[in-house]
Length: 227
Image (cartoon, rainbow, N blue to C red):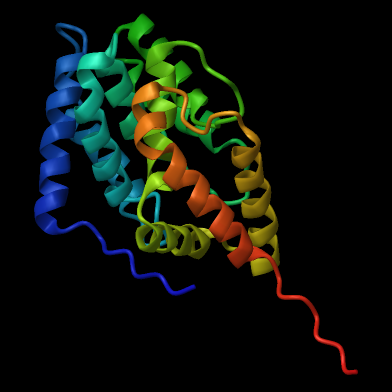
């Protein structure tokens, strides 16, 4: 698949930076060192890595836009926003501990300047984005649904996102297909892909149609035998 996903513009990157700095400063403890610019540069260095094609600034832009739509439904939107900023900061395709490493990155960088209970709550939120558990807390559910919300995109955009995810995978395509098929089949077996009614009502039907259709794309064509 060819990757056609566009990169964030200079203006979009500036907007991300401004929002991050404001959020960071709002969440830090009174009297703590600012450290916002250093935190931004550390974060941006990962999301702007040229090897990123899906888990980049555009993914942050999408997730933050979704957060703004549901912020009034959250108990702690500040914690959920912090988790969005850091949930994909570490991405090594093929590894199973990216979320843990991302959570550790957040703990290391935010621990000296943010309250302990805030840091612990955000770490717990980030770990929910493994999508291997069935969270029951509303904020956890909304974060998981925000992270998966691109599955409910129109088919053309879904294909674009899928091509970008494949472009990040360093191994042979057969291994990418195996892993992606296993993940999509696990999602499809769930009673609900989206845990909140807000996302279930909006995106469940489209997401399931996309997954069914894309699994057909991933399946190898049957071998042709000579009569």
